[in-house]
Image (cartoon, rainbow, N blue to C red; front, side, top):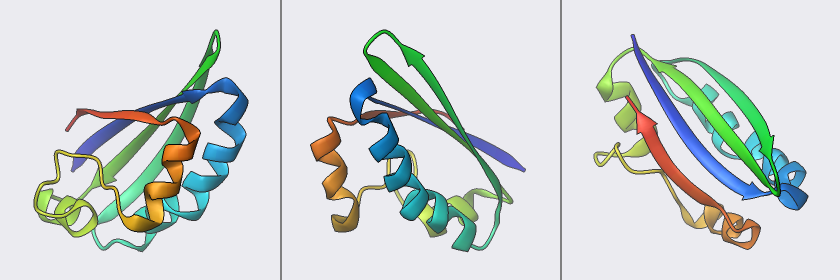
Length: 96
């Protein structure tokens, strides 16, 4: 099993909207991807920023590629997800 953690930051005033965005897009998509064994969403407020972490579990790297594409070390951004730019989203993959 492989664990993957993703970290994003949004202004605290937009954290609820981004949480809803994740529920409708990424978190839903994780559950629909073969080889995904689970996902946790964690949030932490720090001053004016909310840190959002997703921790996912995968059967193997091929499963991650089904979700993220061949360049699986980069965050997956599709046209449907471009709207998150209005939330001033910063992101990075922390680990695999």
